[in-house]
Length: 126
View 1: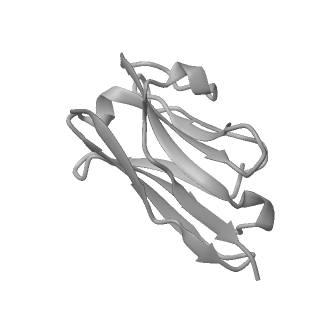
View 2: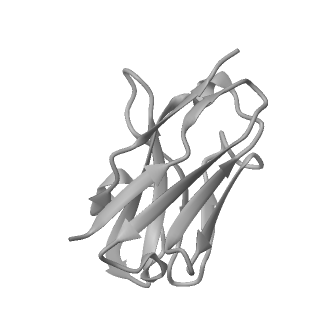
């Protein structure tokens, strides 16, 4: 059974850092484009970052560019999202997702992804 599990969320003060991890079971993440999304209360789910499986290219939303970094750890079969200089507006439930097409370019669009984790809460507050 294909499964994604996020971890690493929590409560952090503005300006702090968190590292989210997306672990896979049942498939090898390296073959698939992986996206990180977030959803705040009352708002639509939005793309934060993604990493392609075709060439390793990455994408970041303008709101997180320069602060967040996405990376793969193939040995651990995980994809991480390093989040620095966190702001209150970064607070949301963060989800990772996988596009089931192998060797694809990643996308910021929710509908492109087939497998989703359960989400991890990130709260940025003093």
